[in-house]
Amino acid sequence: MSGSLNPTALARLLGSWDTGALPAYRELADVVRLLVMDGRIPLDVALPSERALAQTLGLSRTTVTAAYASLREQGFLTAGQGSRGRTCIPHRSVPVSAPGLAVPAGLLDLAYASLSAAGEVVHRAFADALTELPALLPGFGYDAVGFPALREAIADKYTAEGVPTTPRQILVTSGAQHALNIVLRTLAGKQDRVLVEHPTYPNALDAIRASGCRPLPVALPPSTSPAWDIEAMVATMNHQRPAMAYLVPDFHNPTGRIMSDLQRRRLVRAAASSGTVLVVDETLRGLNLDGVRTAPMSAFGSAVVSIGSLSKSHWAGLRTGWIRADEALIARFVATRTVMDLGGPVVEQLAAARLVRSFAEPLDARLEELRHNRESLLGLLAEHLPEWEVERPRGGLTVWCRLPSPCSTALTVLAPDFGVRLAAGPRFGVGGAFEHYMRVPYTLPPAQLEIAVRSLRAAQDKLDASPQLRRTLKSTRPAAVAVA
Image (cartoon, rainbow, N blue to C red; front, top):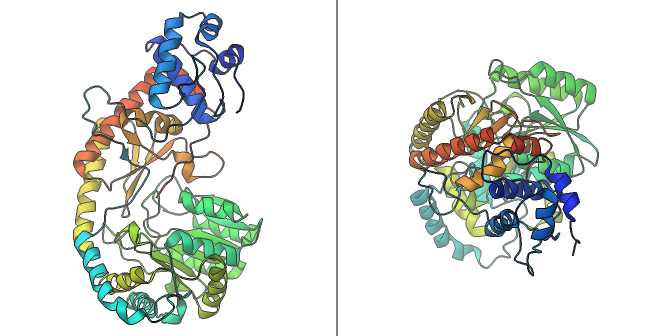
């Protein structure tokens, strides 16, 4: 147990909480909930008794009782004995419909930027894979490098894109995150610097920190021209000498930008000069909504390490990714990989080989669907949240929005009450940056996107009507929600 919180201490944490914009019990419950989610009220702490808190705050006991009841209903307070419930985090957020909104059961999850499976194509690939499985059953089933037919298919895909590749230059992994962890363990030691775009993919930042490395952020320009600040990246590599750089040049997550061939060539040359290994995440490269033509980064230099997967183009449930590099590096990656695991599942690799061979088969329909979703989301944001500045993505799965005030975390905390789950802007940066930003995926169909945007409007309105919520959250650390 973690003890109890006396009423004077809780009153000090609450500050000037009662704005009069909402019923007093609602405002009290909201601020306590936010303090719990922020970590300023620890978990498993007993709150003051209703009577003691009412006396300290100068409220009726009925008001405090109603606030505690609301916290219990939302899952932030245990039942406890009498009124001394203990703070907790709900197993799942409980959505509360906003007035006039038809929010379906459960949350609309906008923290994940992933599509449902390319159903018929994926199903057929697995059905075909099962017919091939009997021939492999006499073997051990371990292969730390990857199933040969899959490595050959991936190598042929790179060759077709103008980057001659052999199967010996491919290591199959259990997804792109697995691939990045292998690369980090091999190329970067503890306290080494890893250059990253700012903002960038949150799971990559998590992996960099978990490896003991230090992310070295280089800001993207506020406008799309130029899409990357190449001069700043080159200067950082020359002066800081990072061990590696993690980049997402193809429909960058979260902004949807794409790096020009000229910028790619310049970066590859600068990295070679500084001794920085460029690690390029290409998982979104296939989601080219505007038909932009660029060459893979590895076309401009042999020292580039490329990471790819089928998660965004086909289905995240496949858990199949890969690393492309020169043979000497692949050998080092394999040595690292065998400390982590002994290889991926065979049936998934059999299916993945078929999917890579016919990589474009489901894409035409999926790209058309994504274009329609993108236009729907952009139109809905313009209609319902016109004060949000929206960066139009060239491809990928997400829209990067600038908010009118630094309220990203506050919106993220409030949104589940209106049926939406979000990833706060600071999840995409270092040092608490991007409170002015929110990533919104367009992976849901238009009808659900409309509900989501209307819910965001309602959450924004509630935040605008309650300045104390802003003050309470001014120094809040964003919740570490899972992001994809």
